[in-house]
Image (tube, rainbow over all chains, first blue to last red; front, side, top):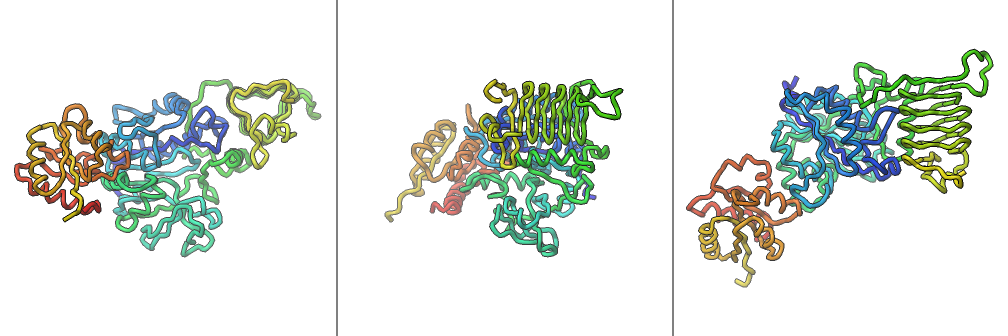
Length: 419
Length: 125
């Protein structure tokens, strides 16, 4: 093993400033890492859980747009896990404008503008992560690999089918795992020598030797550059530095590797729906790799009406099937199928919720129908109202995705004429 | 020789240094501008577009390290030589982003050679 001391030698910086424009209106009031996911989580929880499970306890979260919701979540749910007496910390850092008068222009610029944090901590190694992804990964293995191979920069990568590789940074490596070429979003990606149907793609996870990084960033700051790791930094250092690729080892332990970048509303919906299957692709119930979040103390979820009326199930029965149900939810004489319900959702009598994601504190009124919808927090669907049945009508008031998913923003009021 | 003179900007809070450097570098054939503070230097960079900046680190108000950050973040191509009486700032991450770091000495040979080299590297020679 590398002999690396994770608590002394490593600092983690998480790029958590993503505006998430393509997730609008879920990002109307929050940045992408703070978007709720899977009933009780937020997207950032997966990366942070990976950190904790990898025993990494020195973390800066570099925030930017609409950071209030994210900061609140970190303060309530994560800060107390870090002990300052042991030099552990998790801090959210908005742009300080110490150097520039503008916001971050690229991923590398975000690190460069926070060079004083590196100066303060002086870690041997810097782990750079993105706060936007859903996956399980042990970063300690990546750091071991980095130190064992004596690299200046290690890039975590995964195998991606050729036809999907165009949206990634694609690299080719030699037998020593050394990266010999790197192309950002190439038109014709190079396949792997041992597998012509796929190629190696950048996951946006980097380990740098700190001194190497600082010198590289200094050079980049003087160059004509977008100050981006994928576009500028990596291609510029490959010819002269020791850059290696570390292949993603999935802690999710399923047949297929699981890593998702939730880029669009449709991919948000599909990734969420990964959770409700009988044997979900992404396993939240693995207690060897727990996913943490912030949760309030809430009463248990509950369904009512129906007892004593079996075997024929009367129309007014509280029934839930193939769904994820959070604390404080009440299904009162309603039917819920293939859906994700966040804490304190209430579904009233004769209502029918199917193939939908309902976030905290929503109320689905009596006789209402909700299908193929994402309903953000604190929305009241009026009695008898129908969502997702007449997309032409829904489109007049709400975002409807290419795949026909209706998105209702947080606290949307419902008016009579919307019927 | 019709070639336009290279323009050097010297930023230092010690007046004697400014006088000395101005004399010495003018003798070398450079046009020399001086600034008694980092803030003044930042203004002159915008208005005078010098070819190279020689900057002290320990100065009142804004120090040379902070000023270097401001210059870099504007994606300024201006080459910068840090010139301090102390070598201890060589460890500072930000100072690594300068083109060179020369410790002050009564003998200006090293500084002059560094100016020539940095201008050449930056393609301004």
